[in-house]
Image 1: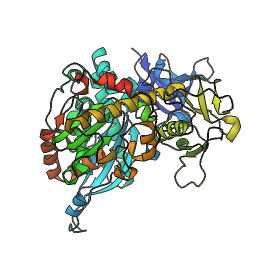
Image 2 (image 1 turned 180 degrees about the vertical axis):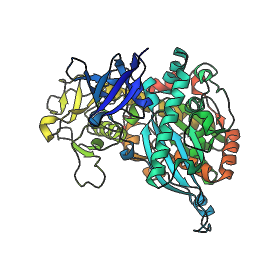
Image 3 (image 1 turned 45 degrees about the horizontal axis):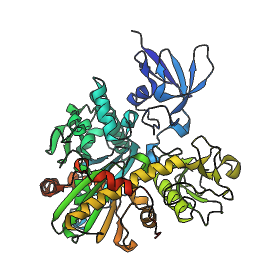
Image 4 (image 1 turned 180 degrees about the horizontal axis):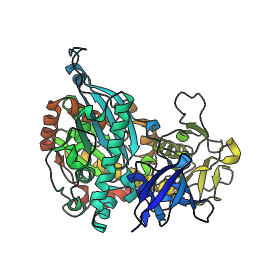
Length: 534
């Protein structure tokens, strides 16, 4: 059958697609990445492009629901693009003991470069490393294009089962994205892709299965076990990488939901140096939790959902310029003040166009502190709160920014549905934490280490206010950056950390929430916000 031509305006780039091929998928296959917060269901409207067809004027369409049945020309608005080089990234802070290992390496020693990958459900973070000196040279983040098939791991497992060939397709999507990132990082430092000598990829078990082209179906059904547990070493060519010549390493998996990402985070936390009672919480689309108790090391995972990272939120977006990252509300009758991410080297913040993950949590915490939402999560009934509105598509909402008020072009609001999404995520997280603390009859941990590219930007007080974490002194909560990314860097640069990851995997005891009869009852009890504010 004849292929159809897609032309990207205004620069005229062309590529061909198979008949009736989905436009979003076709763009991804050609390394053009659009936003797709709803997982390709056509409801978020964030992948809108302007499409011109023969004898038709240009019209806006969602790329995720548009099938190419003829030659078309498209123009992609900037707001629909994934601009990976400007996504705000949490630092991969390396522990002192790791840095010490490389302090005596001669400066003139031949440098070897590699890439550490934190393969998240929502975001893929890449770290270009000088392995000789144990240092991160550069990094970037991009949204995981598999989100087109669902914003959580179970959706993607279902997508693989739904249609033959989807496993191969999902694997190619992430490989192509990582290759694109590797080439971008290499070029920025005057390296050719074949000069990269090694890659370490960490992620949750489902993401690692998909990356390696292994069917993750066993993770989706009881007893939720992975298809394999071992650390793996694979030639990049076997995975479909081009123009690269390196070995790809993945860390072991502890269970169907405890994998290399939390092992890497545990490595980077220097858990062996931490006191008993230390809790590591890696917050993302999945919440991975490790507790160093007096009875040993325990781990669990809970499905916190994509709301914490801005996805599934009505005005959610990536942490790029224009995203609100913090909200301040003096009292329930005052206008909100928004802190908006600026463009690089710009002193002026752009008009708000949405909320990133930290803005979502900050906004919800401020709404609760000021009494605009009740402990149940419902908005109060008070007609004097001028920012509260029923005149929006998502029902009752609190308006943070509107076109008429600040010169912006879009309305940015937190809806009642958004608050409910936050409640689901935070209830899953705190319930998982409480189940781990029960392993040595603890009520609260001694120290909480908050990890994750998203969690690192959250205010400690906001997390306590919303009941995401147990109530402890704020100075006992440590924001540690992207620990999974840091652990991947450590495993990339030193074989001893690969070995240590295997030892940790054998040491961890899994608390499986999916098999618990109590989990649902406790989860429901934790949906509301704490009655006593911090």
